[in-house]
Image 1 (cartoon, rainbow, N blue to C red):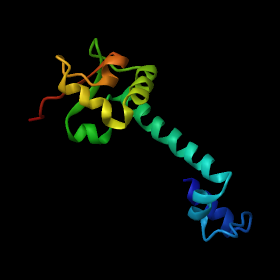
Image 2 (image 1 turned 90 degrees about the vertical axis):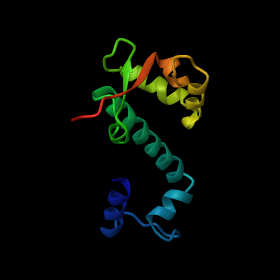
Image 3 (image 1 turned 45 degrees about the vertical axis):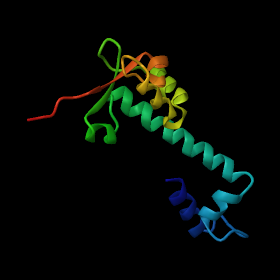
Image 4 (image 1 turned 180 degrees about the vertical axis):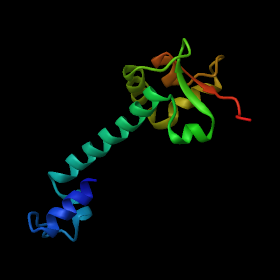
Length: 123
């Protein structure tokens, strides 16, 4: 979205990317645009998980694997629980705790008070 918008601005002459090769080079190497673009991507990434986990308890990948995130009462998780799961996941390393937890919970599930359940196969 951002790249397409900046590309349109460049085509209309509103934005000049010189001395950079193109928009992606500018977003990667510019002292102001690079951190802003990184922040934008981080916000989109976090919003993706919070949106899908709080609505259906699943991302598209979780749906394919028949997994769902639920609160400990079996209902939908809150935005706060989703944010706690993201913050404590350690980019996937929190899942290693599953090997040692008697209830097979990951580190992020313990902290967020959530459970990942395997859904039954559809007939």
